[in-house]
Length: 106
Image (cartoon, rainbow, N blue to C red; front, side, top):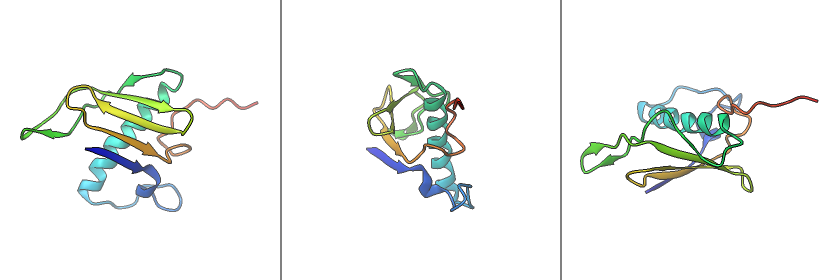
């Protein structure tokens, strides 16, 4: 099953994280780590997230690595577990606190 998430849907109008349910906070933590990993390795075609997959497969939590990448044409971050094929797309992440690209000012 694919997760398609808009990161800004988790944030308030000032870009801060409001009080969320435990489930929403857990999902946001997972997605924000993917955004950080993808943007820290912005110039690379593919990177692996420090945190691991959290999908439940056959009653157990998958702990396999997650590959992440940025589609430069659409500004979407894609991710996929290397073992269980849990995957998703993250939208509207640019400019958030979790966007770790190194902006150069001229």
